[in-house]
Length: 191
Image 1: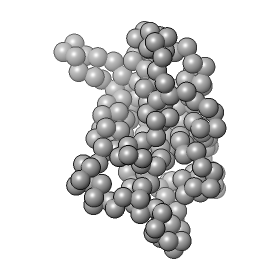
Image 2 (image 1 turned 120 degrees about the vertical axis):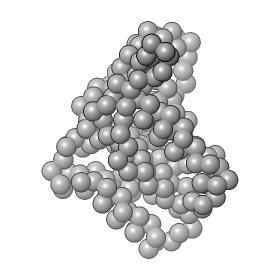
Image 3 (image 1 turned 90 degrees about the vertical axis):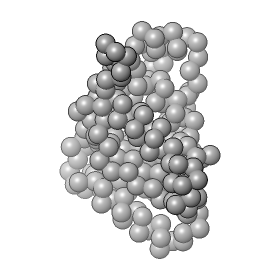
């Protein structure tokens, strides 16, 4: 199995960084190929410029990193998205990744009646999010935009089957025992 972790947290001392390391080590120990895209370390520009948009309209890109990311995704069986929730959503760099990498003609196309048809049907995904907000508040008050906007409207629309979605709440106040138990839970997602 080939795993690809897509990281978007800027702080190397974060829980997200520790979880990414745990995923990488677990996959390697289980004999899987694993690679990481670190959007922050790569200095990926998430802004869709007019030049980017013009190329995007034709299913193309002018950003060499987008080509590299697309090749990495093509090579992977399972995509692992691990990111913090900021203002109810993903970091801008990850949103820009979706905007610029999931190109029409490659990730999806349109059917005769205008419906979007996913083209990445051989891909699977694991989504892990971290936040301070309590999970029940995120579900009821914020109506979980990750489940709707990212999982359903983005990944599943592109044909990607989501194997697991794990929300880790109270990441700043849960304590060491809590975060260690969450690392164990995340490691268990790698089969």
